[in-house]
Each structure stands twice: as structure tokens, then as C-alpha cells.
Image 1 (tube, rainbow, N blue to C red):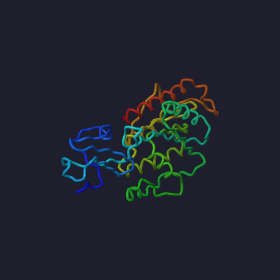
Image 2: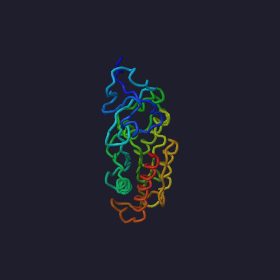
Image 3: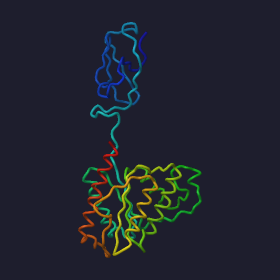
Image 4: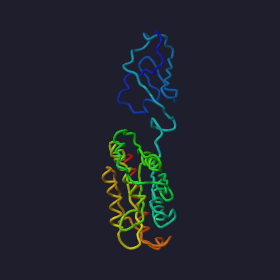
Length: 269
């Protein structure tokens, strides 16, 4: 009787993907994988008309989508970091510091995106508890941008939060983001766990450590992993562009981006 439409390979247990994708021979038949489509397996039989003409195969091999130009079963997803700018000024000192951090990531081939909270509606948590009922990775309050932010967080490998220092803490928009995103994450089994998180703070004079700790506490309670730099991640400036004069702060941001990229790659491997 003819073989069914599937690939039979004898004694291939323990072989690598490369072995499986090469011609596989048994003592009495030669088999090839010649299709790259999902769940489509094509068998070539050389001069064989019935199952009695060769030894019985010991098992089936199911091969999902395979790109012959790569030696992995599926194309590796490009790593991405999403940055949230909590400043009221889209192009202020916080944005400048974020961009210096992202430059270190881009240099290592990691995709980046910045999402500005400025000008968008984002209110604090209403404590309705609906996220613990639905557990759908979304907030029940749908009239603002929080769910857009959640979607970007879920898709990203790393999250960078940047805020100016307002009364020794983060901005109201940033506080609303971490309150609600953190609560939804908890309701869904710490869905941000083991992502990489980093904080960036712009400050005029003092209060930055408190703001820095607020952002890091969000990462820590979410079971995220935090890279460091050579100093606390802050830059000093008041008016737009003033942080450009803080050379130590700029170097701190660049190094933060490089260290974040290093950590992301280590976690990937």
C-alpha cells in the first residue's frame, strides 16, 4: 500500500534541524523535505511502490514553516523597546534624554519607538477592579490611551519610562500610566515579567531620586529586569535643551541604552 501524505524518517531522534532538512536516508529508501509551507510535507519515494519495499519507519516528523535560507524553524522576531515620554513638552529635556538612551539601543540593532503622553487623555485608576474580572490584558476604562499603551508594552521586549521631576516625583501622566498598567499587569499574571525596564529622569535641581525610584518600583513589582548605567539615570536642565550641557547625564543615557541592549540580547539567547 502507498504511504500516506506525510514524511517518514527512520531513526532521526536527536538530530538537529539541519540534519532533518538534509536528505534523510534509510537502508532501503531515500526521503527529502522539499516544501516550506506550513504543515505540508512531501515524500519522494525512489522506486518504491509499497510499504513492504522498505523498513517500517519508527515515527513521524512534523515540520512547521521552514525558511531554507535560515537554520531556524521560524524567523526570529526583531527586538523592540518602547519609550514613554511623560513630559508635558514633547521635545523638552526628557525627550532629549530618552533619545540619547535610544541611540545606544539603535546602535545595537534594536528597534525603538517613542510614545508621547503629552496632549493625550490619560486619567488615574478608578479602582473598579474590572481588570481582575475580565483578565483580558486591557483596562475597562476605554475613553483614553491606556489600552494603546498596554498593547505597545505587551509587544515590546523592553520598556523605557521617562519623566520630568515635578514636586520631587514623576508627572501626573506618568503616574497614571504606571498605576493602571501595573494593575492590569498584576491582574493578568504579571504579564510584563522578565521584560527589561529602564527609567530616565529630567530634573532642574533636586527630587530626581524620588522620581527615579517611583519608576523603578513599577518595574520591580512587575517582575521586570532593570539594567544600570554608570550613574543614576538623570539629566540636569530647566529650559528646553539645557540637558545638552550636562555631558555626564548624556553619557549616562548613552551607556544605559548600550547596557539595555546587552541585557536584551543576553535574555534572548
